[in-house]
Amino acid sequence: MKNKGKIAFIVEGPVKEQQIFQNIKKNFFANTQIEIISIPAKQNLYMLWNTLKTDDFQTDILEIIKEYYKRETHEEMNFLSADFQEIYLFFDYDGHQNNLPAEVDPDLALNQMLETFDNETELGKLYVSYPMVEAIKDLQSEEKCRAFERCEVPITKIGEYKRTLGKNISYNQIKKYDKEWNAIIKVFVSRIRCMLNLDEQITFEVYRERIDPQKIYEIQRKKYVVKKKCIFVLSAFPEFLLDYFPKDFWTTYIS
Image 1 (cartoon, helix red, strand yellow):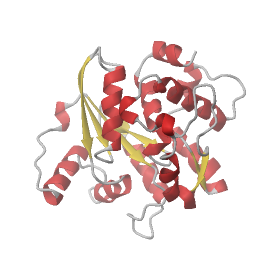
Image 2 (image 1 turned 90 degrees about the vertical axis):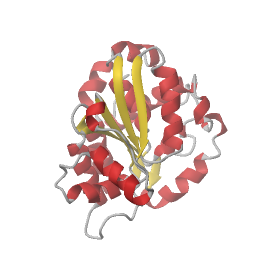
Image 3 (image 1 turned 90 degrees about the horizontal axis):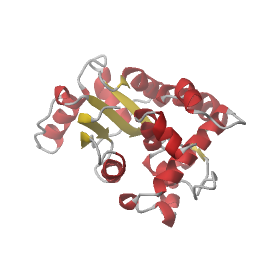
Image 4 (image 1 turned 180 degrees about the vertical axis):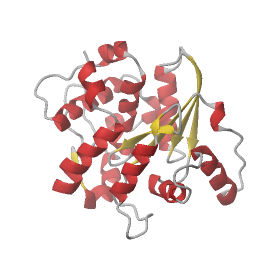
């Protein structure tokens, strides 16, 4: 964790993700000298994959977004990768998407993206919400790990998932999240325990050793997508916070 500098958060959409990061900035970075710049890509992960693949994943992700803005909206974006100490990407699993050629397996495309974007100080680090950004709202309370809707979403039902979570009154006001983060972070760790089939409480050391975006994807694909044709609900945002901050953050929210 750095206490000053500039961080780029590349997100999929211009509204909901922006609200989340404005809230994260207020709740977790207010006492730092870190400047957070949230940049909506206005395209999903698989659209970006298509573009990156043409250049064998060597093209700067921020340059791709700048070109997209210039072509599609005629907007000029004045920033460079060198302006940022760290770059993070936040996208949806979005298993019902249709932005890839028919012969391309979307899960293999996602795997390639995770392998490419695995370091925030180089090309960037990718975090994925399963199945989508609304996963942050799929819980009932700090005391109950049980989901508001379901912990597993069939691939064929992902399109309906967002509408159902709109009924979760307790967690719909993303811009106003404060103490809600206590539950969001605790429930995320409880679900990690489920994914790993752990009976005991998970420790900070076990979490750091066994969990990262690539490992979560591998479990999702092997245990849920392939075997059960579903996705296990996990939000990328508490995952990022637990990765970014040191052990005392874990102690505050989990222990």
